[in-house]
Structure formats: C-alpha cells, structure tokens
Image (cartoon, rainbow, N blue to C red; front, side, top):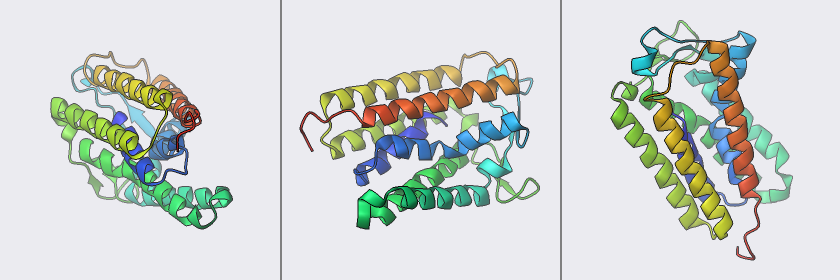
Length: 223
C-alpha cells in the first residue's frame, strides 16, 4: 500500500484544515519511514523472494514498525509530538494531535488489508494478521486507486484551495498512482534489500516534502 496511505491522509486533512496536509501524509507514512530506517540499521529486515517477479511482494520481519502494539505506540507518540508543537492552535491542539495520531494508525489498518498474514500483534513470535488482498493484485490496486482518488476528492471539496494547490495535488496523486501500478506489476526486482530500503526511504521523504510545500502554497486570497 502506497498511494492509499495518501488518500487516507487527505481524507483526514479535510476535517482538520489548520494543519498542513503534508503533516498528515508524513504521519500516514510514519510506519514505513520507521521500517526503512530500521532495515538500514539492521533492526528489522526485508527479503526479496525468488518469486518476486511474479508476486512483487517482499517478505518482512517488522515488529517494531508494523506490529499492532508498535503502531499504536507510534500513533500516541505522534499525537504527543503534535500537541507539543502546535501551541499556536490553542484549544485546537488536542484535536490536531488526535487526527495526526489517527493518520499514523490508518497505515496499519490499510496494510492489514493488503499484506499476507505477517503483521504481528506484538513481537515477532506473536500472532500475525493480514487479509492478503495483494494475492489478487488487480483488485488490490483498484482499491488503492479508489482510496487515493476518494481522499483527494474529499480534500479538494472540503477546502477552498487555490488552483495551484488543487492541480499540484491532483497531478502528484495521479503520478504516484501510476508509479504504484507499475511497481506492483511490471517493475523488476530491486538489486538488494538495502537498495530497496534506501530508495523507498528517499521516495517517502521526497513525497512528504513535496506535499508540505504544496500545502504552503498561497490560496490566492481564498479561505
């Protein structure tokens, strides 16, 4: 799941307009940001199976980034950090913190939909869950594209955006949707797990930075 996380973040961004939407998207990617950092540090692991060219599904050991208990902890930490950093919102600080935490946890919920049962409840040896929608890739990709387009529509309809913001967000979502489809269907296997981690981490950082920048674009005098 990639652009689906963006869709969830955009939907949350509709209901809390005082926070830059890029913050919600960064929150929705928090678990993956942690995953790839942990892989590079050797704390978690990802392996590329022999059948990757046909399944496009790596195998993960990621209890600290994608475990249910860990995901709840990341959500709480993100909420606390948001509350501490958003004094300018005054009475709205708690609301912003709750929605940022919700964006973080939305990642686990969407991943549980598509992953095979490999998301641990607690640690590595605990029960693992996953509805394995990726085993029917056309359906999985269809769901993901619908989620991002629905989130984009909700966000644009719920915010009086400037044309520059609306067009930029739409083009970015369409471009990333295309990359997602290619990456999950015809892209070749990555050369190594470390290369996969490094490129995935760089991609997430660039996407988050782009959306934060889009969120800072002026609204041409509109609310």
